[in-house]
Structure formats: structure tokens, C-alpha cells
Amino acid sequence: MSGEPNNWGRFGPEDQRGTLNLLTPPVVLAALASATEGRVLSLAMPIRGSTSSPAPATVPHLRGRPLPQHFMSVDGGDYAAGTKPVGAGLRVADDALIVTHHGTTTHMDALCHMWSGDELYNAHPAARVRSYGAGRCGIERVGGVVARGVLFDVPRHLGLEHLPADFRIPAELLREMGPEPQPGDVAIVRTGWPSVWRRSPEEYWSGQPGLSPDAGRWLAARDVAVVASDNAAIGGLDERQLATEALEDDLHLILLHRHGIHLIEMLWLDELSASGRTDFVFMVAPLAIEGGTGSPVNPLVIL
Image 1 (spheres, rainbow, N blue to C red):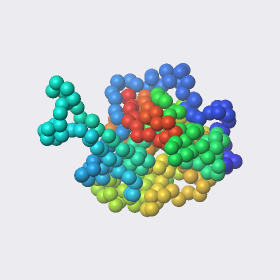
Image 2: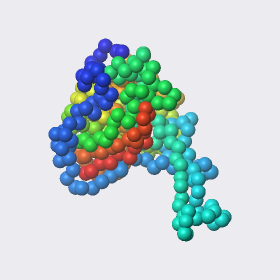
Image 3: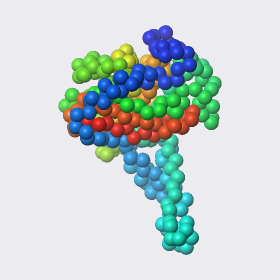
Image 4: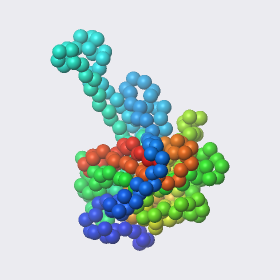
């Protein structure tokens, strides 16, 4: 692992939750004071799954990723065709949804999602990540997150609809925008990039703006519990939808691997931006997928 500052060992040798440990009861109770209106907003993109229509492709996603699939094992058409009711006129629809969340919908990355060398965050052995799930640092370790959210609305600050594809947000810009995040906060970074999808999927795939490595380190130094963004990778992407930074500057390695900071990607932040609020209560709970590298999520904010 890189010799730069990190959180390995900070919360004990067996820790698998990283900076979520900073969300102590007093910190959570203090965060609740950030709600002043009582208005609730969802920050999730819709999951549109279908096996017989282009619906899944109408939501922003990375090219080449398996799109959501939505099946019905029994539906209204089956009963119309003669399927027997469950009992005494009782009918039920029963569906199944398959979502490969990384790159296709609003999701949270687990600490086992990315690493370098032979160790996950906190020196847990990477060999414990198997085809049936990760034995260490899986998404089920997260539980529920309730924290103060802090929005860095970068395009709004710069007077833009969205950032250019090659824009990498420097730490100086985050520092200039304020408010400075406090330990245990969820830092939410808006790029505006999802709006490009409506204009052109090809443009959306031409690259993506995101945090610079120094901005990631600046947030980590402030002990944020989570870093979230409306882009697909927290950092920027090129036209091949890949990060171009050297290994020591990769945002996932800086945040997930070295500092144990969970990531939430592909948020929908337009309504939150329009509210004009920069701090609020933030809530999210991933599915308890044992050994999962991540989970679809529906983050909520209370203004």
C-alpha cells in the first residue's frame, strides 16, 4: 500500500467499516439538527428493468455494463389466460429484479470493491474476496447511515449547467465553496453530468468530470464518513470510461482502500441543487448483501 496517510489500524485491526465509525450517537444526534424544513428528497435515479423494451437504456449508465432486468413470474396476463387464483379470488403479481449496480444505477461501493496489492482496506486479505462474495469488508458491514450531508454544487458555483467532461475539481475550489465538512459528514459533489444524457448518450460516454486526487485527499483529511457524487466514479473518466490517474492518485484507492471511506455514485442531484441548501440530514441504507461489493441505494435527504 502507498505510504501516504491512511486509516489502517485507526479503528482497530479487525475494523471493516472505516470512517463510518465516526458516526457515533452524539454525531448522529447533532446531524439531525440540520433538518429545518422537514422536506424529504430522494437522490436516486430510477431503476428501469425490462426484457422486452428499451426502458433500461433510457437511464444514464456506463457503456457495456449489464443493464437491469425485470421479470414477472406471474402477472395479470397470466390470470387473464386462465391461471388459477391463489385462493378465493385472490391474485398476486410476483416479480424478480436483477441489477448489476456498478455503473448502471445509484449505488454504494463497499470497501472490498477495489484495492491494490494483496490487501483490502485495513490489511484484510484480498484472497477472501471470492466469486460467491467477500469474506471481509462487504456491503453488509455498512448498516444504516444517518449523517449531516454537505453539498458541493460545483456547476452552480461556477454558473454552469454542468462541468465539462475533462474538468477535475481541485481541492482549492471545494475549500472556496464551503461549508467545510466536519468529521462524520457525507460530502456530496454535484457535477451536473447526468443532464448530458438527455441531450446525447454518446456525449455522456465521451468522458466524465469528477474530483481531482488532491480534492479526494482534502476530503479524507477532514474525516468525512462518505463521499458521494452524481458521476459514475467519483473521480473523472476518459472517453474509454476509465480513470487516467496513476495508481497512487486513483480516487477509489485514496478513499475506499486507504481511508475506508465508502462511496456513493450516480446520484440524481437536480432537485437538491434547486433547493439552494448546502447542509441537511442525509440517510442511506444499502441492502444487506453478504459479501457484496456494493448495493443499489435510495439515498434520502431531509431539508
